[in-house]
Image 1 (cartoon, rainbow, N blue to C red):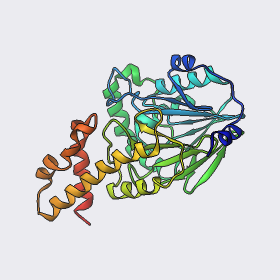
Image 2 (image 1 turned 180 degrees about the vertical axis):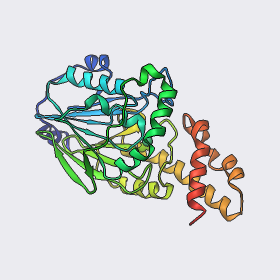
Image 3 (image 1 turned 60 degrees about the vertical axis):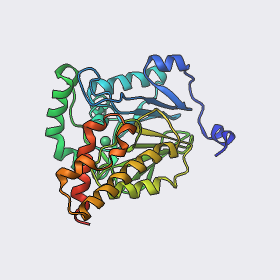
Image 4 (image 1 turned 120 degrees about the horizontal axis):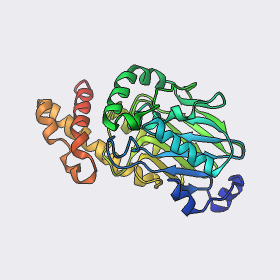
Length: 306
Ligand SMILES: [Zn+2]
């Protein structure tokens, strides 16, 4: 899509200066598309669960939020940022998947006029894990940070590709097969060519496998064919090219799959495999020591039944 075509498609929007956007914790990565960058850390009292990228898109009639943060308080900061930019209502809160750092801010947006939209499998996944997610995150971030946080389940379940209208711009929602989790969904803003991948793309910090490594590699192959001007990863910079997002991730998951398959073929145990598989990737990712062995463990459990 050319710059001229993009300009014609994007609705006229109130302007906000980059300095003002930064002051309220967001970056305008494309016209009317704002992203708050999460920190590269696990949930702790210092970050209060502010570790995932959170976005909102402003149309001429309404706003859509994509992921809400790891607590009600973080959700509220996103809501305040929206209010500083536009008086338009938040018509949709879209969750890219069930993980707490993406959905626990939903509570801040509860309103009769707001629909909560997610992959059709998200409600079941989140409800099943709710008790553990709530207890662990409260412990990790502390009571004050966690105050007001509750599970808010989707009110609209997306089982197949569909669109949402915000006035002057259309979002396309695409539920994906099991990959990072069993309820990943991508969102595409046609007006600016921006693809929101949630945790189907991790950058900078090591990915975590909570679905299927084989499935994730298949979804990566699908994403390579998307015509996106830019992507917003679930963790990483506020915006990057599709290939910059997919290449390191593809390499990391393939390294695990290849080493784990070889270990299984050689009759190695899980205990020895986690000590060696894909260690070539160690210097490429933040939080590698915290999550890599669990990824290898998940891959081993999946691949030993191939
Ligand atoms: Zn996730």
